[in-house]
Image 1 (spheres, one colour):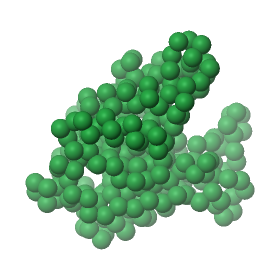
Image 2 (spheres, one colour):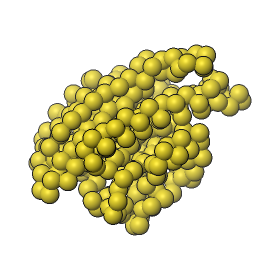
Image 3 (cartoon, helix red, strand yellow):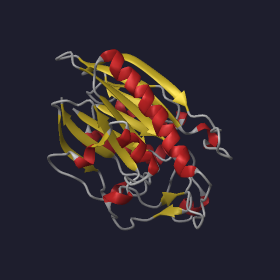
Image 4 (cartoon, helix red, strand yellow):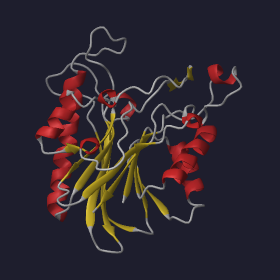
Length: 278
C-alpha cells in the first residue's frame, strides 16, 4: 500500500513576480505539475494540505482520466483522496482546529487553514481496515529572532497534534485497526509537537523504513515572490511527516520524496510517500 502526503501551496492566481519572469503560478498551471507527480507516484491514499476548492476541482478532473478511480474526501484545506477501485470508505470526518487555545494569547489558525480530516478504509481484496488522517498544524515560530515569531507557537502545535492523535486513537479502537497521520506539521522531529506524538505511542515512519529512506528536508522556497531549488537540507529539519501506530507485524518498506527539478515551481513541499505492507 502506498500512502502520500503533499502540501500543494494554496494559491489560485498568477502574480506579478512570476508574470515578469514569464512564468505562471496559477492553480491551472501548477495543478498540471501536481497531477504529473501523483501519476508518477500513484498513491493508494493521498493526504493533502493547502488545497483550495478551485485546485481540488482541477485536480480531480485530471485524476478522473486515470484508470485508477480516485475519490475525494472532503476535509477543508486538508482533504484525502483515495483509490475507490481498491478501497471502501467506511467512515470519514473533518475538524477545524480552534483559533484560540486556552492559556495562550493570540490566534493559532490563520484563515481556517489548520485542520484535520480522517478516513477509515477497507481493502476490497482482503478486508483489512486502516485509518488515515491528513493534518496541517500552526505555522509560526517560537524563536523571537524569527520574522515569523509568535509566542507559544511550539505549544500550539503540540496541542493540535494531541487533538489529532486523540481522535485517531478513538477511531483505531472503534475499528481495531492501525492508524497513519500524515501532513505538514510545521515542526521538526525534535520539536514539542513530535515529542507529544511519540509520547502517545506514535512512530515516525522514516525511522522504521526497511528499504529506501529519503534523508532530505523536503521543502524549498516557492511562493508569490518566486521559487528556487535551494539545498536539499537534512531530514532533521523536515516539517512534513508520516507517523504510525498499531502497525503490528506490518512492514514499512520505502520512505521517499519526489524531488525532481521540474517540481520546484509547483509547490514549496515535495510529495512525501511511503510503502507499507499490511
